[in-house]
Image (cartoon, rainbow over all chains, first blue to last red):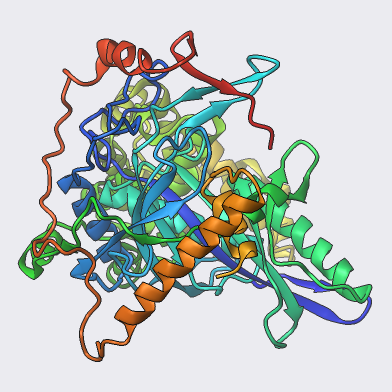
Length: 485
Length: 98
């Protein structure tokens, strides 16, 4: 849903484009054979190439190219068979080369499109402008010494994909939905782990405001937005800031701003502006990257079913709602779990309800994820099957589930042990109904006198007598007949 | 090519120019380079794709295999031994103030 902000002079709309840096899953770095693992001791994974020692030459990692192509295909994007690495020149101690090897005029992936799922149950398409490969920089630490900075080059040279969106995003909800979907796609593809805490997925947010339907405004680029919460907060803050400036007759300056999560504000990074003249030129150490179309086709054949495809299939094949489908596809394992439950249980809609409301609900309450569940998909499917064939009622099933969730036992065993089998024997139910009616002559008289809401009272009494095990449909049927006779 | 541009480019490239004389000299040299390039630009290149590299080949790719000889603990010691200053495994540089 688009965010509309009411100002003094009218209604404003927020226009957002995103640049996402995603670390490519690979064993080694983009141009060197040093390990690309997270969490090593400082400078333990630094080759002479990463430290930019004189005479070292970059050699492109096959896997990184493959991962970039895979991601491009997952974004329904154009794959460019020819792409060129260029040097982006700037000076900073965590960039020992004095330039970042990136792609500029000829990125490996061109225009694409993905669907985002919004909280109000609608779907929106967001355009992808491009995806290119580039090197990550190292890390500087400024608080270890009063006059020195410390530099760790482990991250220096790790492969990144920069994914740029079209300015199609209209508010924090859409921005969060976009990032979530992008993360989901890359996790399905296993090209990036999407871990924002560890910095393997980072977002820069380009924000401008305009009067609803009016011409585009000047944008500011917000950096250091490192969580979904920060994205929401930074967009709200920055939009209000720009509207205030414009409504007071001022102009928004095109600049890079830093999100400060402590102070909850964005502020200008003037130092970045001077260095904005990056003087890109093709890297003479690297030749153009030429992809064989056969190879691209081969990669395409190895793609898994992607989140949006899965979502549409769940809606079409199983008749699930958009909401249920988008919850189930959020993780590949979750979707697989659901499909096994549905297959074993024989009822997809019922299975979706149980997976989402009972299982995920319980896990969520315990702060656990699906991996930690004691109930396997087959076991939950077994429970659904028992509901389906009327062995137990839905109400009893909740108790059975609680025990399965705690112990990991099979539903059928729990039902057997505790004697929870639903009573569907009409003769037995009739006997109990007769007993209940005989025991409540007053209420029977009132019911016959027109107080029909007492029907529920009788149902309750029968269920109580049977320990909740009587089949509610049969109870209703017989009871109605008896009371009205 | 004027002296203002030369000063800007020198600043971007972190080159120190020693004074008016050097700025004047570099301006003259760079003007020479620019006019040489202008001469090249007179050649009609319509319909010819820009050349990214004079080497008429495509990029060779490397397997995604880590080389332990070049990294790991010993690698860190080796790479740090090139640093003028280091501490606790970090390169140490003059404070960078953002």
